[in-house]
Amino acid sequence: MTCRQHWEAEGETELTDEDWLSALNGLKRWTKCYSHVEAHRKLLYRWYMTPNRLHKMYPVVPAECRRCAAETGTLPHVWWHCSGIQPLWRDVKDILDALGIRDFPMNIESCLLLLFPKETHENQKQLLLLILMAARNLIALYWKKHSCPSAQQLKDKIQQFYKYEKMSTDTIKATAKFRETWEGWEMWYKEGDFLE
Image (cartoon, rainbow, N blue to C red; front, top):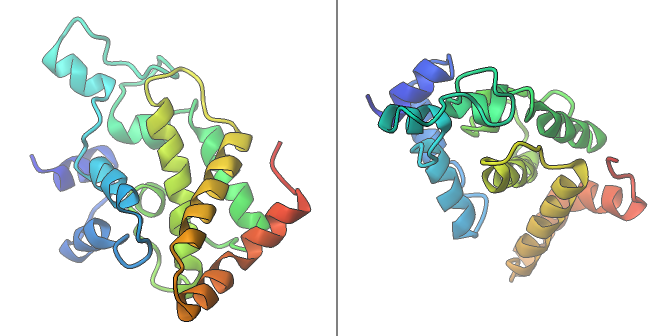
């Protein structure tokens, strides 16, 4: 079974060839940070040793999710469906709402595979990608733990990505695009209107 077929079976979604190609190459255009691209590929290629996968190799290892201990720890469950990780995705939704991005679909296709609806505005894509990458980065850091990353950790991680992207804007044209992309975040961050 291919990675794509695993995503379709476990994520209960159907991916076209165009969707899968878009998921594989979706970040190249929006960030210069290779570690973001690498982290995205690790998730797509199912690099993480989830409890379910470990259980198949070593039957003595429990197959249940470490956070909820109630469901089988498949990749879509650990990264998306688990009740123990849902607070992080609610925090992401709250940030998007605060930034005026209210119609973004919070689902596996958009948040994990980075397949956005065609009507997603070009100016929002980079901001969306980096906010979602920040959440996913935190899940990768905490994926073996029982706890969920906090709203403050999410805000700090997004701010860290903001700083990295700001440092990589080396031309006037890139600086103008950066300001246009991150304007809402800068205002929200400066006002201190953070999630608690």
